[in-house]
Amino acid sequence: MTDIFEYPRDWYRFTSIRFQLRGSSQVSPLPWTGGSSVYGPHAQLFMPKLSATEIDDPAIWRAVDAFFSRLGGQAGLLRIGDASRLHPQYNVAALGSVQRWSDSSLFDDGSGFVSDLLPPTVFVAAAASRGESALQIGGLPASLTPALKRGDLLELRANGMPASFPHLYQVMVDGPTNTGGLTGVELRPSLRADVAVGDMVVLDYPTSVFRLVGDDQAELEISVPTTANFGFALVEALDQVP
Image (cartoon, rainbow, N blue to C red; front, side, top):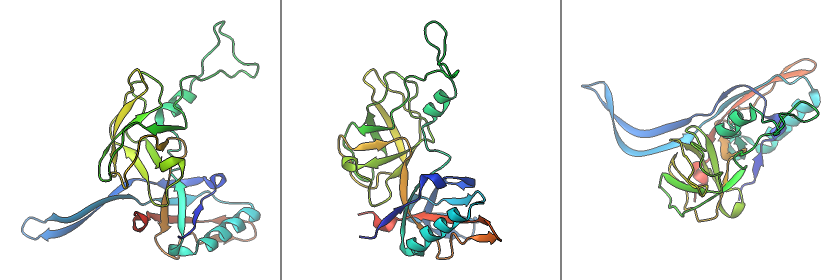
């Protein structure tokens, strides 16, 4: 099996991020109307385009160069997440506000505390089959409206282990929780593999498995003597889906 190299989190520094889900369909033109007729398979996949911040430390850009050399172009597999959506929207909003103690005091450093955050991982509450687009999730705080919000990303890990294929999904509709901390969400793309009760659902730092779109990606442009710029485009490695 091809090794999967994880993009270091310390390098999640980008000036531009495109990480939207894209559709791909087989179509035939309709010359009389100017449109197209979809007649073949339809797929959805993430195809990120990332521009990194300028690197002014030669030791770092040399490490980046070595990382992509080791990856070996399109032949390699890369695990990375969306640096603009590393956490659920609920947590991002909650971390923007703090709570005081009952006497209205804060910590000595002037900060407060945050309660009822969504945990970094939760679990699949009901088994689902490949191709389905609905998922029941447990382990969330009770009675939140909503807990997961449309646009949030989540990663599925059977038995808590990262998959060797793309297992990243986007929430399509808001998912409120009941008194037991359960919610149901609609996902895209549809499930790429069967999931079982208890499988891990990653909410913080969800990732997927990608290939570079070309062997010329991530070329470093060096401004002598110290600074470097680079960017790269990816496509989910659907060929790895079992």
